[in-house]
Length: 90
Image (cartoon, rainbow, N blue to C red):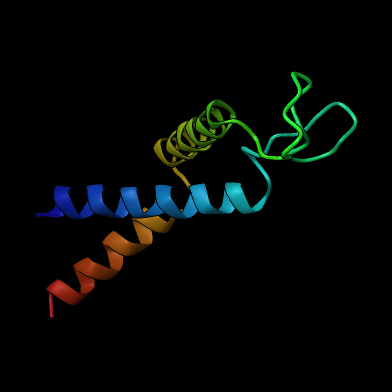
């Protein structure tokens, strides 16, 4: 049970980290002139990034949040497991 709790806590921490990274702007498309989500040079005048750019940004956020969590994260996994262990022993 403790392993499944640790795994679930790690996944939760990774989700929180991914949200923090997205909020910080990671995964957004930025051009050389600094405009976020600017039109493609290929002629996309809608101002929307293409699906492949969105997918790459999501993969980048997922990979980085996973790496941070596996490297120890921000301590959320540990805190959740510790707290649940205290609750289970009562």
